[in-house]
Length: 463
Image (cartoon, rainbow, N blue to C red; front, side, top):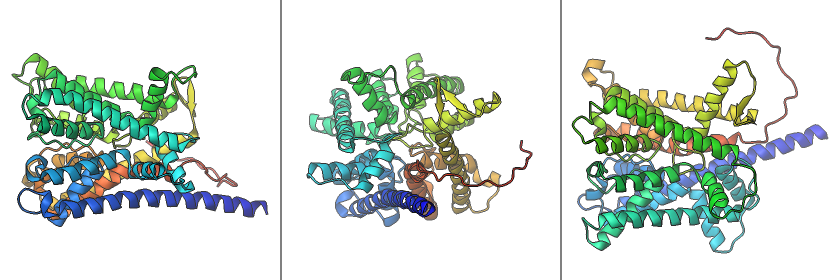
């Protein structure tokens, strides 16, 4: 009887997690389908209608807040098409389940157990006692920050555009920045604002706030603004996100300046060099805006950006990648093994073994996905041509793949040149990059079965 009940409980947990993953995937795919249909309408474009593949690519890039595009959003999409794209960005940034749950709450309906389980797994490392309050806080915080960012950008854009156009562009870029989407109505992204500290700092602030995650934002808001929390210090999750993010920004800034000071930044004023380095250290995780020509960067810089894109933003954020906490746990695991310890300790706290295993699974799966899709896209784009025939095609393709997986949107310029098959592969990759880590986390979160037996142990040579 005890064994039967244990099996029933485990099956129920597994079934709920499979259902949660299915809902997440279907939610994003449904939004992509609706966006594709709307973008294919004649009203969505200025000139010719978008074909199925291009509309699907653009819709997926919007919902997955990637920013890669095969069209010029500012000139080829009509105001209606840009509005559709803006809604897709907002929906993808908040999360489809978050929006649907929010509207369910607004309509006064009760949340199902499945909804509560998905939201809890998506926005918190632990159990969430009040899902309704969490969803309301996430939506309210997002709207407030985007409005503040839009207002600040308006004061700059109104110098170049009519007030209505300036307000529209300010809101579009504020939403795109906070959602870490990287879509811009400007030709050349923000290259024209390279030396303007005001615009750079506003955009950087929005990107960082959207990238550190709602869990961190709510905790900081409760502690610093509302002063509700009476705990002795910040949670381990918040501390790890903030410290790791700061190290990546400062480290990326320092290395970018070293690599590009005499290259793409050569001849630029000192202030332009400093701002460009800081901006390009922040945007690869995972916003996708740029103030320099990505195609003109040196190979070491491209490798640096790929590392930052692969790591990405924080969990429960608008960004992608394997997440800074996964990277932090992997670094902690390596350090603990070098010290001969079985425990991963951070900030005087021990990380649960389940979390370490989850991070290792996400890290390994991400590497395998990058290798597989790089190989497939190389074949789809170049066939079996030699290295000399592709003229740097491998590095540019790997950069594009990493950007798509990290939902970044940076490109060396090959996106419009992709073949139809390659565009479809990148579309699939963007979806995997947006929901892959989340699905893995939900699927293997808590409720692991107890080990009832173990096989005989045997040694193995590694390294």
